Length: 255
Image (cartoon, rainbow, N blue to C red; front, side, top):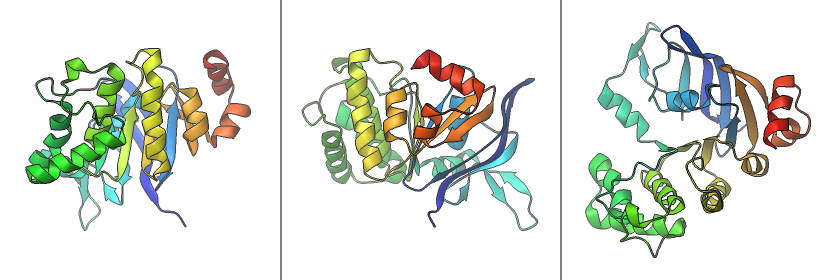
């Protein structure tokens, strides 16, 4: 039996009176790619951020690699919130790539990738540099290591951001619409890196509008709307024969 790397159980999220996530449950096995689709405002990005404890949930639980995220369960079964330091330690096993690249503008590509392993994990500079060099080569940027973000295209910056996330040796990679800020001609180079990562066996949770990627690379597809999972299944099933009218309507408009 394959083990679940991510377990999301009956998760609720409120912003004041706004009920953004309404009892979302989802399992992602180790080595699986799960693509989350849906219209803007459906709760996709909020769910992804909750996995990394960038959003606090009001009910339910999220477990990554067997670790309950954001909380500690005591012997009597009660939950206690973790400190910011403890949450930061949990996040070290999760890589996240955002719409915007969030690179340090005053650092070169290789320095951006080296920074977290040195500062967070205490890795020595020569080792961190060697690993960063390897990762930048892996994402096709071996000739751009000394470039600053302003000297790189959007697609190149996003590939640096992926290498930076991988530098922490994460168990899981989260992608929050990683191509939405890119010019159309640059999208392919980022998706290519993500496909290679998927083929390597990385567990990936991907919020995306790239239907071709979801259909070709994902092991499972989730369609969210109104803060709930409306449809969930294998890509072939969801794309070819969606059961829910809302899913059919959405796919008819975007495909």
